[in-house]
Image 1 (cartoon, rainbow, N blue to C red):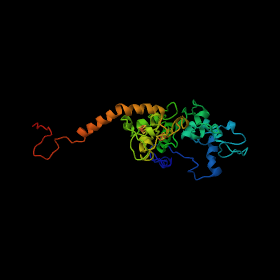
Image 2 (cartoon, protein in one colour):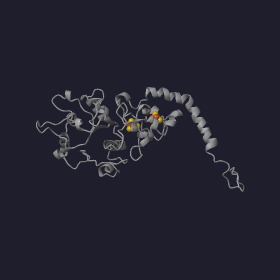
Image 3 (cartoon, protein in one colour):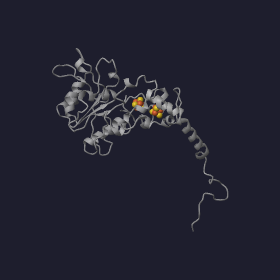
Image 4 (cartoon, helix red, strand yellow):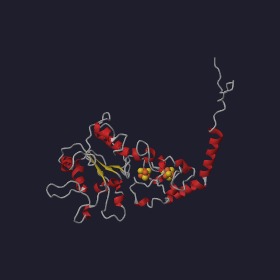
Length: 318
Ligand code: SF4
Ligand code: SF4
């Protein structure tokens, strides 16, 4: 999130965005306070001393019902028992009072890599824990901002939007069935990728490198992945995944990673459609467009010349 620019975290914290209510960020990576001083905000929120607040969760939640003698996670400690407070318990304590709960990253949204098959913790996302129908006291469902990691501006933009929504200055973000904001995740990576025309023309890269053609034969999962990174870039419009030569491995998806593995193999469904493009209409489209460019569009109109007559078609009217 520290690499976000639209808006930047500093814009949010310093109030550089016109009309935006004041925001105080409590994040252990950025905070000046350490230890108990840092945890105080959490205890204050629990007592109702911080209101309103937005609870943001990163990382998957272990199933603490199967934690044996220990804990899968822990943050701060219970003043009475002196035992660590698990993240699950913090969610139990704070979610009833939060104006909104946001899950950031694919681990917090859907479980992600820690929730892969054969994992020992029974890891899950925040909606799996609180329930997919859960709503905050302000009536807002859990907002999922997936991605592994989440795209920087997707985080800050959506958090800014939520603050404006909670202040009654913007509509509540529309979410899809997977809890993702449709403004960010309404399109597939493929629908946003600058290589999609190569796919349409049946023109595919055969090895990694500087080849600028579509990567589907190398394992790109973009056609079945909701993500705006190919369109938005990674930071300030620069970088990304399939748009800059790395296959999309579906890191924003609830089915990630198991349902998309092995990553470097061609997706069976994409194989059918890409072979159709490759062996039927693709080459015809490519040839036809190439011919049009060569014969027509790569040439200037013939009235652009330095001869002593005007041939643009201009007719004098008076
Ligand atoms: S590289 Fe991937 S996302 Fe881009 S056009 Fe090809 S299949 Fe689609
Ligand atoms: S394009 Fe694919 S791999 Fe890249 S961030 Fe989006 S979902 Fe993840």
